[in-house]
Length: 241
Image (cartoon, rainbow, N blue to C red; front, side):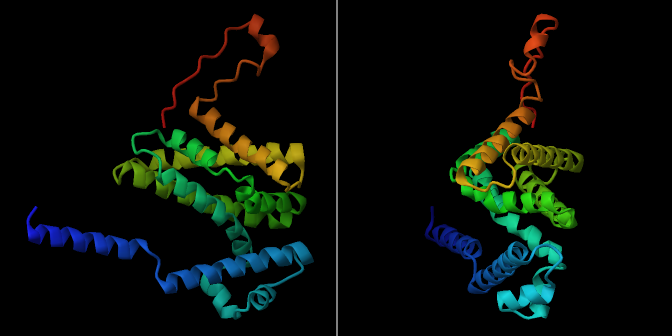
């Protein structure tokens, strides 16, 4: 390598590092966004649904009403954003997986890498609160829609710009449906219990749901114990995603 090409490589590396490291302004914006979301959740816990306003959230977060709307279009959107941290951590782990690995294998491995069950706590709390009061259904819907968009972006980055939009949306929709199923079963089993033990159960349900999707939903051997004698078992299908 010539001296010139070495300089070019070093400059390119420096340029990449600059863009990968958040600026002070970006860090401040992220902190403000997080502060507003935390204030919204705190007011929901203390006041209950329907008993606080955007102005209350802004005052609790120490920002103006205008600043609130610079970050969120509505009160419901601010509440929905409490689930962002979980998705950010999961997608960070997803992007560390080998490029040749299937999407669903990477998704399952990413969930397994989140060893601390408390990482799913904000999303679990939002889900629990919306089950108790359907006035908050819009917040839950916005959270899932945001997760869907993030999954599509992550899959597109992995697979390249030429991948079918139908594939991306069908994949993301399937993953989100499995996430909803895991949450629903967890809530049926544990209710609004947000202890570490309960959240560990939720984390495992999420991992298992991804496994079922990857296996083409072939039922486990013990799913229909009485049917084994009257019908052949369903063969396991290979993960096609």
